[in-house]
Picture: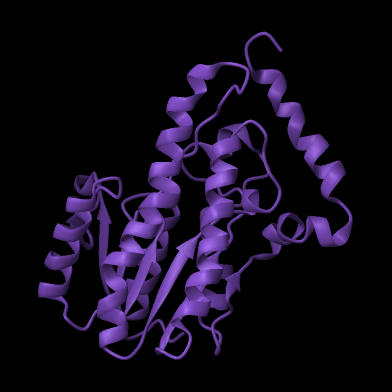
Length: 246
């Protein structure tokens, strides 16, 4: 993907990885719009208000973006929430419902909103965002892992269904990245700039990889293949000791 002359919408781009990636696209010469619920946090890029849990909000944002940028050719959908859950307490269901609504259904809503436009223009690129946790669960955040595994599976099907339309589909598979306080709870979290350096290098390849997996995410993505899955899962399960009564 040539990131220098694209017209890009980054949904979930008002903070964290999304904002960092949006700024990398803009710095390379692309026209960039970032979408989110709190657009007041961004003053250096064009913004659009969007709530991915609200179908009407997604459609309004789509119409606003396409009116201003009819040449839109790249949609990055990365809105997400990361919530802890105690599966012994049925009250966890509210967190599970929110997680699936934002991470999985939100991804599908955004993709659905823009797919007809991209197909109609004869080409473009959709970028979804799963997680290393989609491939190696972190039991303290069970619905997060389930939702991101869903994003991965959905992305695979989307790529197959869009084959031949000119619309390419790539999936970012981040490891823990030092944003939104991750650096405080996970000393191993990858610095944001280091992560973005690798992502931009991978996205810029021709052809663009189906899965954009930086070095720090490789052990998660391929744990089952490499025979390290059980040991890594046991290590990650120790975090459950932080739950009340454990």
